[in-house]
Image (cartoon, rainbow, N blue to C red; front, side, top):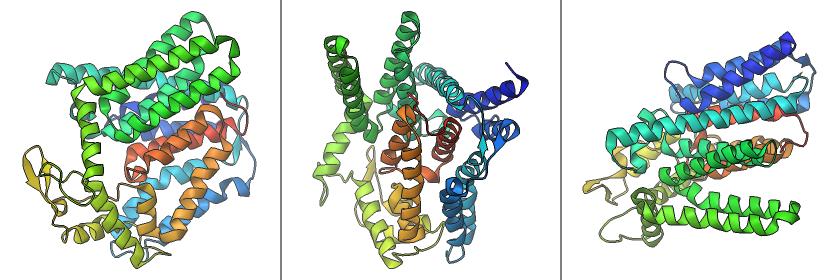
Length: 398
């Protein structure tokens, strides 16, 4: 391997390997920096203003909207938070490398295998500590929340599944077992958006395979049905996911009132008051960093009682973000911010292919129930997807 190729491979490998662990000392940001520097150091500069325009516009509006925010300190904090997204797009958008597609395949698989190791450590250490399987015991010390951890598992499973159908039979079996282990993790973590999305993705993916691998149609149909049934049984059997589905049912039932004496639909209230904030400045928003404080004030008028176990609480006792990437963008940056976010995610979906495209779509869907870009775990994953997409280029990537 050429010296420059080694630098490039190892730089990207470091970024891929560190991402799922969210270690406090060896932060994923160091790996992402190593990836970006490796591309800059080994790549060929090609000025492409159209390629980087969306990243320039995104960060420019993030910065501009600080100046009318009533909470500029929080606004600048948000700018720093999303800066890796724009920097990755700006740097890698103007540097081209050789063998980009094959490099990206290696980096993706390394990320997926690293996620398998990370999840295994989290799972078994939690079992040893707590003695049972429950989604609340898998927070990874608070460094990588359940929703984001689940998102990482889904993306890793998508990556390894694509590699099952290439390579030796032994490799295919190992990757297949790893995918099942990751899907078990998704069920255990019980992020409800993923309990809904993953079965849909499984059906769509197996439908694609059945269409392209007609000679294995019967086997693939049985396999698809088996995976969905087993996941369904686990959801019903395990206390964590079963409880989450009961919560979901109660949330739907309690849109306008209590169920069994409790309110469970706190997101509905957060979204309701978030929309009221957005309506105050619909075009340019209330300013970057303003949502949490403004929402906190709004929620003081909310009289609904919620419960942690049997302990009652009111929503204004905690500070919440909007729990929706689109609503968060609207309340802080108005319609303009929503359009720029749609352009950013749309760029990723358009420019990517194969499993990377699934990853971009998953980010957008996960953002409907979580403010993905308000947490480092979401920002780092999006920055990593940007790097993979730009290094691979617009080529067919399975």
